[in-house]
Amino acid sequence: MCGIFAYIGTKEAIPFLLEGLKKLEYRGYDSAGVATLDNGRIFSSKHAGKIVELETELQKRPIGGKIGIGHTRWATHGRPSDENSHPHCDCKGELAVVHNGIIENYLQIRRDLAEEGHHFASTTDTEVLAHLIEKFLKKRGTSLEEAIRSTLKIIEGSYAIAVIAQKEPNKIIAARKGSPLIIGLKEGEFFVSSDIPAMLKYTSQIIYLNDLEIATITGYDVKVQSLKGDKIKKESVLISWDPESAEKGGYSHFMLKEIHEQPKAIRDTIAGRVKIESSFIHFDELNFTEEEARKINRIVFTACGTSWHAGLVGEYLMEQYVKIPTEVEYAAEFRYRHPIVDENTLVIAISQSGETADTVGAIWEAKAQGAKVISICNVVGSTIARESHGVIYTYAGPEIGVASTKAFTTQLTIIYLFALYLAKKRKSIPISEVKKMIGDLIEIPDKMERILLKEKEIEKIAKKYYKSNNALFLGRGKGFPVALEGALKLKEISYVHAEGYPAAEMKHGPIALIDKNMPVIVLALQGRRYEKVLGNIEEVKARGGMVISIVSEGDKDATEKADDIIAVPSTTEALSSILSVIPLQLFAYYIAVKRGCHVDQPRNLAKSVTVE
Ligand code: F6R
Image (cartoon, rainbow, N blue to C red; front, side):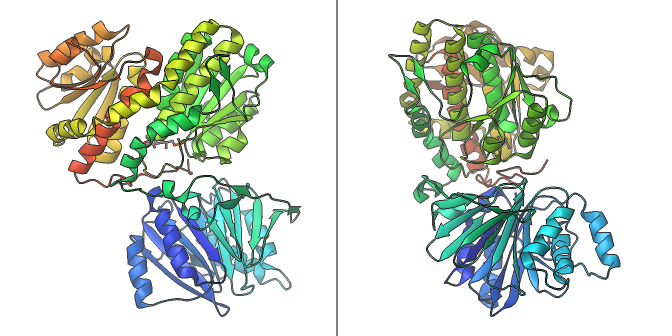
């Protein structure tokens, strides 16, 4: 996904821009570029490929200036190329624009501008922004802010932009609608960025820009106004993530670091929210009254990807403990299929980034139908958090690896706690059980640590199977979403074709795939469905398949039948998914490493999917 980083201050801008853009690399990109203002003139350099190539070019042909904007592009309109890379300029190269998002009506605007004599250098949607601003700036007495406001009133779609112009050479103008953008504040220096980790090295004091807000950033201050030109008072927020936690911290990949951070992430997520003795469960920004908790008669989880898998676990938990009919919807489907929800429906949107375009759309749709919307989010102040009536933050800290790991287990933690919260309010389970279940959760981080000690063992198993080009993941009950998640992890980072199935469904088709080359990963934890899963393992073995079982410590039967096992500490069925997914994350990680894949930035993927 595209990234923006901009600097204005007392130092040379280029080192900041390159450093900031490198921090945004994890989002996925195919080209990078920068533009600066030096002695009132615009200079730019942009290239398809990695940031190191841009860096090399800048060493050969340096550009100076203490004001600059930078961009990493992830192609949507127009293939990755030097011309299509951002920044984009007007006809005379007197202003430069970087943009994230999609301008939906760009074709018509481009045609109109071309007829008026504008020359386009790229096939992007973004370039119309530069030419529209140019057009408005030509009107006598029009300021840069006014020209940008007029431009933004015309365009349809989503944007986060940063603009510099020769006409007003002492400022950066930033604006957003539907794409995240934040401003970092430091004494005499200001930064603009698409996300927090890129900013943390320089400052933790940030301003979140909201949709349809325009910020004028000079070397002295930040002024924010609406599209109409009304002044908007903004407060800055102190971000408590420490910069170290946004770095790799000695691990070979962010993904591995984040897998290991899970015990801490779960402890942080639980901290201050529960007390066993009083069965206390509290969420600060939930905005959910006792009455609302009692009157809901339906729950809909909506999310994408891994967060959707968390929702599937939620379906089992809500129905079992809160006794309310629950569904799980892909956000992209939910938003467009005229869902039937009303004021008695609780819609729970789940998102790590809080910026996933389809999940934002699903929230809008749910609100339009009158539903109460609560989000489970990792990024504080993100769009999804702000668009929801209430929010429960997962305190996973920044997740940089594209494959979601600690975000998933903290989402599961919150869903479990929220199920207990509702169960308590609705008296659907006895208080004694609520207390016991809180106690079970508190034990989870220590148990996770025991699984992480098995890393070498899991690496060995990965070494045995890494050449297989297919894999099947099977689970029953709450093991089924884990099977889906294990398959997703493997396919996205190692490019191995992997499918997750409810174990019982194997007989209805996938069994035809099984032969000696097909590793089958089976979630075979102790519990109500254990015997049935044993039967599924037999079925795989009878057809020559290779079985890797995730079993409970002390297990005998599944262990005997499997070719390889990874044992996890025992817990209740309700919490089993949080533990059993960890071996699958490590398995996928080591397979990807053995296959020489780019673990943290898998091909074609983006960390934050801010377009539909
Ligand atoms: C997979 C993964 C994605 C995300 C999905 C939703 O490892 O990371 O499937 O889960 O793009 O993203 P969020 O949770 O940010 O809404």
